[in-house]
Length: 61
Image (cartoon, rainbow, N blue to C red; front, side, top):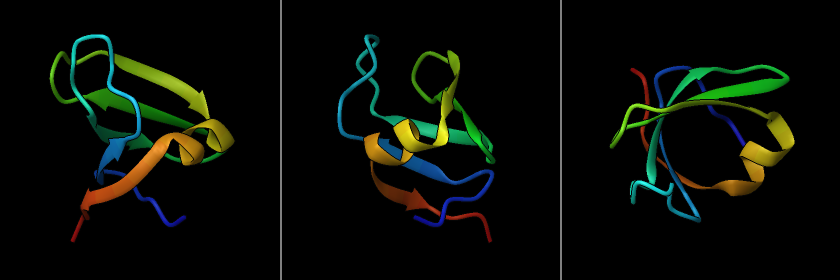
């Protein structure tokens, strides 16, 4: 899966706040994602992030 910084992604399961869209802030061995609904940030391992992402909504130009 090709994901870059500033991409907007949709996850399979919603965040507890109800949002399903996330902004990618960092890629590498870990992904840093920011919920677009509440602003919470998480740092999760790449394998878990790639498994939970359904699709890329918007790409960085």
